[in-house]
Image 1 (tube, chains in turn green, cyan):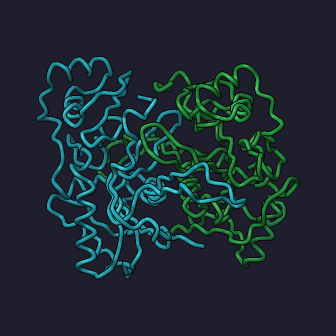
Image 2 (cartoon, one colour):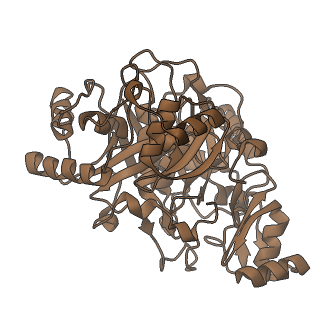
Image 3 (tube, one colour):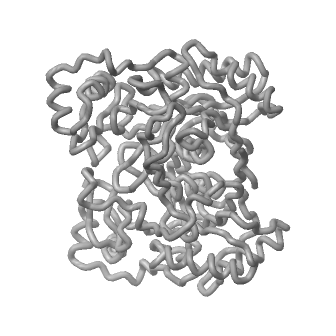
Length: 251
Length: 251
């Protein structure tokens, strides 16, 4: 069994108004890399926000009282803190040099997912407004234009408790269920499985992240080819990856 | 840029005393899949514990007072709880149907990483005793026997706070630094990077987990080919993936 992770190497700098389905189709033609049925296309969240014109001009951000207070506590730029507050529905943990919050989407991450790298000076990109809908739109557009049945994952790179380093996670999903629920299946010995829920979309995002790199490599779109997922067809969004608050013992 | 994830499909059931380097070499010959310089070989932790005879006979486990109390609190089998306590140095969180602890290695996970699937009835496998050393031994043995410069990752599938579902993580590492420290590098615009530490070994484990599956597929060994990691050569162990206690705000 073999899975391929293929990075497009000629994606241009993305700007407001760019159509990411067209960007994918053009790269595919330029690189003679045909999109196939069953491909899972992983897209870095930063270029989604850029294409949607969803950038924050930090210089124009007017920090309120709460932002000023949190900025003092964390040593962060008050304008960035104001932006974090606007993207968050709840502050989860604050400490020296970090703010972990629950974003308006429900993700729990540092800086509300606001990214200052890979955008022009003084600018930052928040997480896309509605990454599941964006993923759905790109998928439908590719099906329409290419006749290929692909799935889309929009990926971010985030830290996590207990373990050092950030890893790729899915923040938007279309065409594939993000969780593989294996309850009822049995192991090699006919016993029922213990680990029954696999966060497939996060594993796909982590795999793609290996290709994307984070800086001047500039590989924001990766095709995952050969991953069997007929059993994961159906409705599903990135919300399925969020543990319900009342079941999460770490918040 | 292309990375391949290749699963061996003919690995036999592993038993105590099996030499995993030989198991890999034999599978490679049987499947005409030559090991190459730069391959990263990801091995499921369960077969490491099995090969090392590191299994727990739950029927013979005598639960002490603490185990009985925790069993009542969680609804778990007192013998399993006793095994969890013996593998743990600290209990982190307990609730209905779960025990999250810090294992003797320092990993924070459910059930101290003890796995009841894919072993015979009444048996369970804990995490390997010293997965970094096992990874190192397998790597040196493969270099010795094949003359190929490979890296080894021993992988588990673990849950995490905030997000649903388990993902692959590295519990043993040899030949590759598990964390890619990118401080000092710049982005597309010449600004310094914000996300500077990537948990490469966990991303590799998650990618391999996509191939391994969890049940009767039985693909416990996966080759990752084409992942550039010259910059990650050097000393490193799975301990580098553990956030120091005093810096972890979630414990």
